[in-house]
Image (cartoon, rainbow, N blue to C red; front, side, top):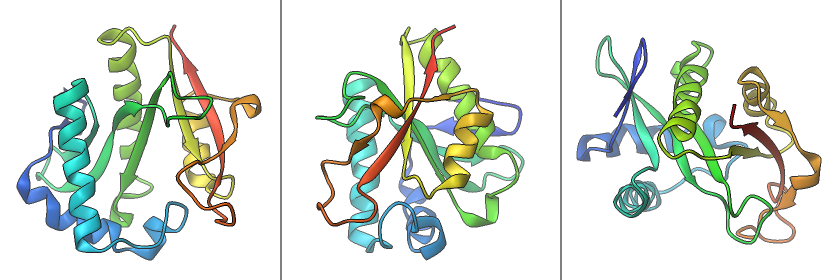
Length: 176
């Protein structure tokens, strides 16, 4: 578990599934990710994180507010997308419920996860990706001190050729 001033970045629990599905059901949250998911797809996402934690020792962890135990979403790390320029890197990602946007939680959590990757995993760099239209996400990447790397932009291999979410931009944080 990673702890910050306001947050616990922790392993997933069974009771996280309901609030995670609520986040994944919000069209505004999912606008730059994919269409809102079904309950089965949302639960499969939790299962993937549990499997990643078991395999790698890290995942997109659950994000909890310390003050009241509220489940805010997730933030964490995973291996880079296979068959892309970041395949050999760690990828940081986050997704928070809309009620928690604009409070600095994503930046606080992401900064802690990047620091953890450098300190514990001794990663040489951490990548972050998003679609060009997701200004909130790439804006956060910039506020984290990450640098845009157009040479590492790619078409996401898991998405159809005509999917408007297929083009991805890449930002990097280099190990200090």
